[in-house]
Image (cartoon, rainbow, N blue to C red; front, top):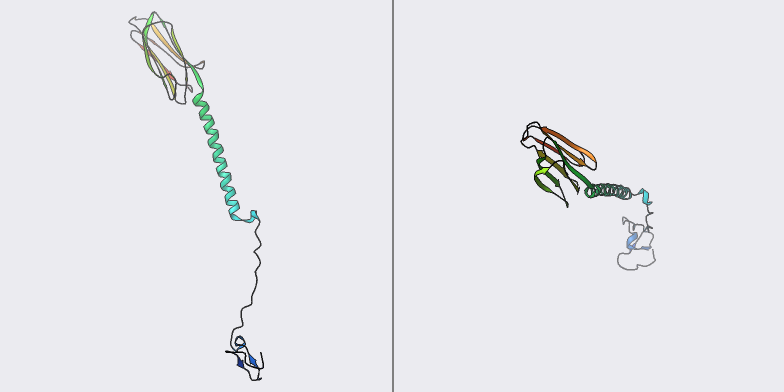
Amino acid sequence: MSLTSQGQGWWQANDGLWYAPQQAPGAAPPPPQYVQGPKPKKKLTHRPLFWIGLVILVFLGGCIGIVATVSTAVHHVDTQKHTVAYSVTGSGVTTASITYSTVQEGNGQKGTAQVTDAPLPWSKTITASGIFSFFDVSVTNGPAGLSYVTCTLTVDGKVISTNKSSGPYATADCSGGPNG
């Protein structure tokens, strides 16, 4: 407000005074100027992302723990050494035809071997390891009519399989693995 016009847009009211353009009737007053301070920060434990991250972290930690435990157990089973004994005995015969096999994954003895006219009793001991191990021994009787042959498969001192067969050219077979 002034007694004289101060420039363009000033207007004179009924009271004879001059008013600034922003004070014109019907003009919207200028918006108030508020200065906002920083928003107060939420506590870390009140943030949803904190809890989501914590759940994911616990889940991944649990998975890693399970995988490590299983990996250790599998490694132990894979590297554990087993003493395998193939044995053959007989009655009424002095020799027999014997076939023995070792099937295992990884390093070690594997394959099939045959011993013809093996003197009885006969045995073969090997050391084997691996998760997937399987052993077999079979014996075929000779031509003697009343004789019998017996095979026995022992793993780590425990008899896994034993079988007996009698008569000419009869076969006894024993097979199994470290877990029976």
